[in-house]
Length: 316
Image 1: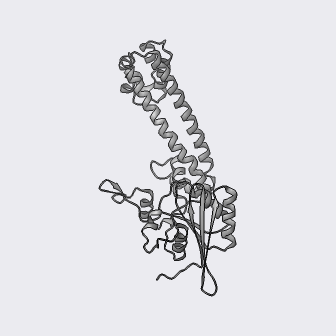
Image 2: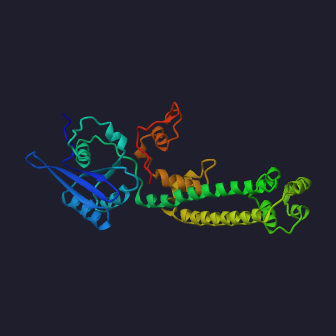
């Protein structure tokens, strides 16, 4: 039998509209008391949960990483100073000895009491909030790439082969040419004159590539796509400004990351938002790589993703 190492523990079973919490407390005479309460997931109710855990002098509270529902619970408990950890559900399933009549919250409290759970990495609140911006930026970048590809396809559909001549269709010269194509009142020769730099040496190829048949609907769709691309670029630029401004407390670590070849200001900030500034929580570089899912040969086997053994990544 495993000897308990924590005198008062709490297990929290988190659902979308309900939270069930069990507190196991060892009394001075060695007896064990169990209390289970249920709370709604409104902030007022979660505050009551956190205050109850504080009143009971809970040493460690544990919950599973259930979707995004655990986040609000975590923050309320964190605010009152009670130590709270989030654990991977797969780890819990692999711990033997659970009885069929034991609830999820009670089982979590029992495992916490015996020190059998491994905490997932949760960055500080400031970095968690920064992640909202950096991960949204990743989404916007994906949308931007999709729209740029769609622009290529519409041009090709109209017989415009600009992408075959211009190395960067998102460059200044190409953008001016696309704007003229959308207007529809310029000849290929006139549009080709907009070429700048080395592209001017490809005037003949440009004229040939611009001799397509764009219909009014082609032009209308190109204009809509171009407007969306411009909007996405503006949004990403605005987020970048906020991300850079948020790096003030982490200036030293942020600048150090930028000394790595290929790591610019934004990439360094996004790395900090994901892994934090304290590398000791990962133990070593191998565990950090495993957590990030980039450990070669360890994250995939026979075409199937495997679960990392060290600190687990949690979708923040």
